[in-house]
Image (tube, rainbow, N blue to C red):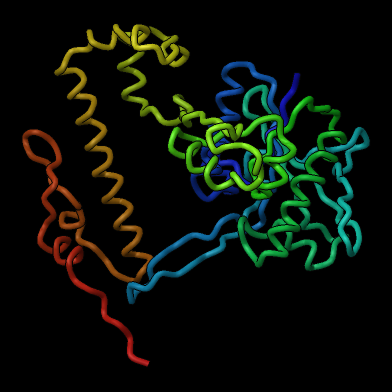
Length: 329
């Protein structure tokens, strides 16, 4: 059995900026975990020209939005091609005509993520903009993106020779998804309870506790979210298979043998790295606003005998408490 995982965003790496937050990170972690475990999954999403907007502050302290262009040929992926070397495309039907869509692929180990791109010369400007921005545009544009993802995604799978036995949709057509899917779940115990209450009207003959919306608490891809220093520590004490140990408490008993001093030293190394990262980030931020920072005063926390403390230096404490000036119009 092969499962097709459809999502409006996938958060795999900073160099593939087609995600904005929680949903994308979850979808990306699912594909990574499936790759590690050898589960036959294929991902299907959209390849956005502008990705999700970036937030920044201007010299006056006001929030600005930027939409940097994605250069697909400098990103981790490739255009899928036919046996004759041409770009592989599929036509997606809309009310006002077909939209030609190019297929790209990004491998995550043995798992493939297929991404659809409508920014082709053959399409009208409006159709090219379907894959312009993640969650951009009005409601009609969002619906067009969902059609491209759902209908186009299934046609793309057929075009590359994948015949899924099941497909899981993570995009926003909630009611059709609940009605047509074999199962549904919330992402935590509380979310499951709230979802059963929210969607009870779809099953009026059932009481709330009878509604078949379960719950599976989200996990994370442990390779991605465990710092290298902590990974090395676990490997020394738990062996190189610790990443695949199950969640049963007994499976983690050996972690108690890690010495307090060694664990604290690893923790302190990570705190120092956070401080260095914060300093560099602040310097870049101030430079982008046309200002400068003295490198010795730009550190948001200082290092004492026991590592970085949490006391802000006076200039930064001032920035934390002052109110920005409101422009007069």
